[in-house]
Length: 107
Image 1 (cartoon, one colour):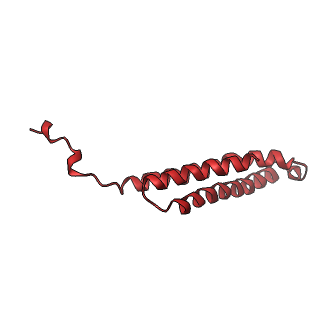
Image 2: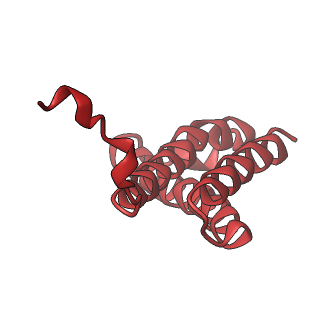
């Protein structure tokens, strides 16, 4: 259930960013959700490997729900990273109009 809430807010954040920058809204909303799942899977693999290295056999008896909660920060971190990349890349696309400058103070 908590995953659905994360998916909604992640998709909405990417959707509004794409809308502000006049990009394809649904494409970037789906990319944001996919980045969340990519982070979850990658975090799960990394945590599983680390558990097996430092506590051999402990992953077999580990609670799956608790393990899922441990993977959430990885998903959110991947999401935030992709959002930051898009936001910074699209800032350079903004066009500055000549009327935006205050020329009266230059004299």
